Amino acid sequence: MGVKSTPLAIKVAIYHQLLDGHMARAIGRQYVISQPTILKYANDAVSELRKLEVVENSSALVNFLSRTVKMQCFQYLDDESVRELMSPILEPYLSAAEKINYAGRESADQALSTRVSRTTEEEFQAIVSDLAASTRPGLTSSALLRELVEDYVARSKSLTPPTDPSTLELSHGTPAPAAPAFDKATLLNEVLEAVRAKFDSYEQETPPES
Image 1 (cartoon, rainbow, N blue to C red):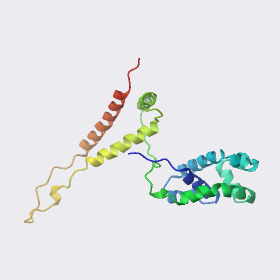
Image 2: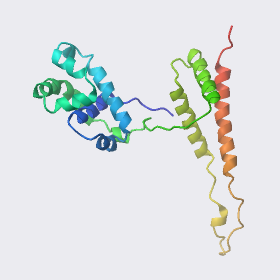
Image 3: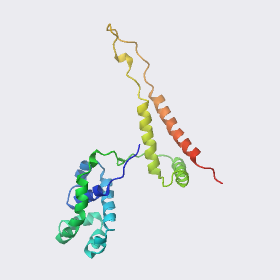
Image 4: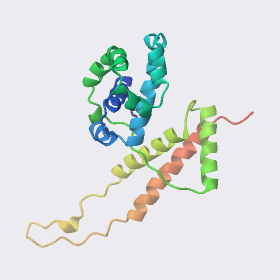
């Protein structure tokens, strides 16, 4: 169950909306992302724009894009010369962004968080490091967590109990005998076992140290 990375055109469009004075909250509703993600994408856009030759050849743009996004927003609306320089650079990205249905995408923008013991965190990081050094080059703790959560959700869906027969009626109108209550604890244990099996499979894929 994979997700696609956010197109640069969308990041630039989000950055441009900030420059134009739009509130981050409104942008978040439009693109279905969090405010921290908005700032991250704006910074990503700035980083990519600074690599453009046309930007590198303009001291005004180099100076402008070297400032924080917040300071750029303050300057942009009042600095006509900067807007004139930025407009032709941003236009291709904005046109491309209009053709992307980003709000309807399946992405990994929604954050989940929890707290674990130091021992658990250290052991998890060790697993990630081992995988990244062997069978999963470039693997990060965030990517592995996302994979485990997605597997958990998929597993839970596959274990959804059938309709409780006690809610149905027999043909002659007599209620059917009550069925045993669905054991949520059993479901949780089965899902956790699936997660443990996932870790076990990773460890089996990791070649032994020489």
